[in-house]
Length: 505
Image 1 (cartoon, helix red, strand yellow):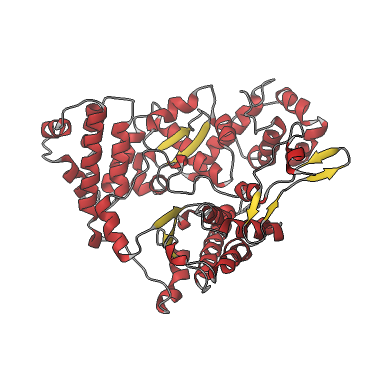
Image 2 (cartoon, rainbow, N blue to C red; image 1 turned 135 degrees about the vertical axis):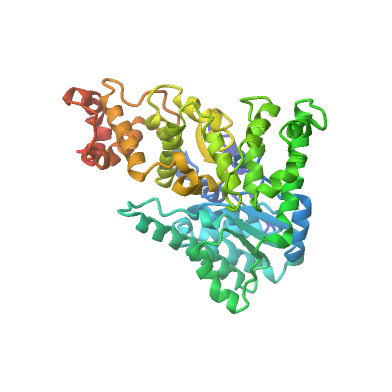
C-alpha cells in the first residue's frame, strides 16, 4: 500500500515517516487485520508514555515561581563543573525513559533514529530493570554514533536533581514504615547505579551531576566511589556565599513585586523602617541561616493574592523567632505563621499530613480531595490561604496537590519544630478513619462530584474498597448500619465492579 493511499483511509492519521539517512528508506508503522486497519503505537509514542513531563527544569509543572539559582551563584558553581547543563527530576519508573526522551530532543544527527530502533528491537524495554534500560535506551544508541559523530559539540553534563525524593515501589503494600523506607532506599541505589553504569561506558560523552540531600543511603553509595576518586563531592556551603545570594534574590523579588503592583521603588524599605528593620533583604539573609527555602517561602507569601503586598510583608516581618541559635528557627516561625492564616489551622495540618501520606500511596489528587472533603469547597477554604506552601489546583483548575518544598514535611514531622501544630500519627490516622466512615454514611450519595475523564467510578470504588479494611476495624465514634451501604452495594454488585467486593468484604 502506498503512502498516499494509506493516508487517504478515512479516520486514520499517520505520524510523518521516519527517514533513515543511512539506508535511504522511509519506515511506516501500520498493520492490517481483515477489514480492520489498526495502527500500533509508534516507538516514540511508547517512549513518551514513560516520560515524566515535570522532570525538566523548564516544565510548566514547576510553576513560574519556581526558585532559580541567581546568576552569580550559577557562575561560581559552574566554574567547578561545566558550562552547558540540562536539568532533570523524575520518579524511578520514568527515570531512564525520561533521560532517553530528552537526549532524543537534542536533535543530534542519527541519535533519534538509533533510540527508536532500539525500542523497536526491544519492545519490552520499559518493563525491564534500570540497568537494562540504560543499556538499551541510552548506551547502545550512543555507541552506534560514537565512531562517526563528533561528541564534543554535544551538551557537556546532565544534572539529576532530587534523587533523595525517589519514593518506594507503588505496586506493593507495606506493613511497616521501615519496609517503605527500605524500598525507597533501594530505588535510590538503583537510580545511582544506573548512572554509574552509564558514566563507566567509554562511549558515554556526558558528565553527570547529582543534586541531593545527603541522606544515609545516598552518602553510603557514594562513599567508596569518593575514595576511589571516581566522583567529586561539591557541598554548597559558605564558600558559595549563600547569605549574599539570598539577599540578592530577596531584593530582586521585592523590586519585582513593587513593579507588578505599581509601588514606589522603596516600598519595602518604608515597611521595614516602621518595624525598625533597616534593610529587609539583608535581614532575611541573616535570618535564613543559608537556607534558600526561607527566602523563597516568604516571597511566595508576599506574592499571594490574599492581601496587599505591604500587609503580607508586615505579617512576615512580625514573625520573629525567639531562639536565634537554631538554624531552622526563622523557617519554623514562617511556616507557623502561614499555617495560622488558615481558618482552621489544626484541621488544615491534618489535611497536609494526609496528603503527604496519600501521595506516598499514589492516590490521585481527585480521590484525595473527595476523601478529605466533608463539604464542597472545603479544600479551598482550608488550604487556599496556604498558597505559598502548597498548590491545590493545576492550570485547568483540576485538583493537583503539590508541596513547594520538602522542608514543610520535615517541619510537620518534628514536634520540636512544629510546636502547637504537632499532631501525633494516631491523631492523623483517626482523622482519616473518620473520613472513610463518614463517606460510607452518606446514604444514597457515594463519591459525589463529576468524575474526571480519566477516572471511572469502578476505579474509585476499587481504591476505596481496597483500603477500607484498614480503617473499618479501627475504633471510631461514627455509627452506621446496613442502610448506609445500600448505595455502595448497588454499584459494587455490578458485573464490572465485583472485584471490589472481594477487596472490601
